[in-house]
Length: 466
Image (cartoon, rainbow, N blue to C red):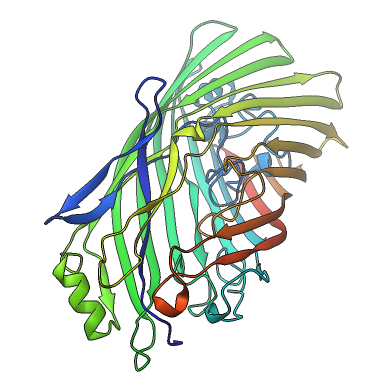
């Protein structure tokens, strides 16, 4: 690694608490007299976006037909076993027992361009493709609906739709802000649905989420004889939540779906691991207790609300739509860093994020008896408050989705399908100003952009009745 002057940066996510209508305040935990961690709140959405991106870190893409619809009709479609995840009440529409297995591959064009205002001593490495491994990362899910009776269904879903892996080159220009980080949530969802009458069905599920959090950031050593040091953080945690769903069938061809997914708390707790520190930096960190501190990070995965509609207008055409809201205003980001190794106690925070909206519309076209085509378009407003300016920790904001897909009825009991969507995020800028120059121990000014960001999602799935 390249030699740089000293600065220690711990990149984490912190919790913001709202007290009435007052200003957001940070709650910082301390261990042995020093700053050790902070908590974060990720709040509500009418969406889901995580392996890929919507207006935040939750994803609609779990490998199903909803990819080709760009999430239109997400919790009203209820045409296969994936409804266990999108709206458990929809299980009452399924015949007999059904299972669906899906897989997907995603490629994200998220590459950084260093601007002229960046500190020259940070170097010229642009970091490569930030998301996944060279831009690639997988996804998918498994879903099962079991019929106890025509009016009572049990279900189970396994899918990951929160977070994404982020990996820059170790020596990239923004290494003192982040080198790589992984924040993922995988959900295990046992569910139940009951048909109240011919029009109304209700559903509920337990969301047992397994959270994975890893973080790595470079440490700027002041001694020219030393290369960059490194800080790593790694922990796993379980969190628990509830999913509630309602489906109302206005008539035989028209239905409305409404879902609410509760917040899930993931509490991570581990000791940061330091390596490659110069003696002076190690002594300064040890003096204030940072070397032996324990970092507690509380992630609050957003609660979410969404309403969808499905209507069959004739034997060939059906129209679908969705609207949702995400309470990203409770989401905040914090960078705990040492701006001066002679006084390594400084703490910097970023302002809160904002709520977002999701809108989607789509259609299904019956091309022939075995073939059904799906189309969709969706928009998610941005959750980062400064327009197109973002943090390298989260190179995403607003998102447009364009989906297309098709599925074939192989027999009375089996269907397979392909789907794809493209998520366009536009050009995103960074403008991070350091409190001290790189030459004297600062992180440096990181100014640049992610140009024409986008993610291509390719999915395949199969659904079986038994």
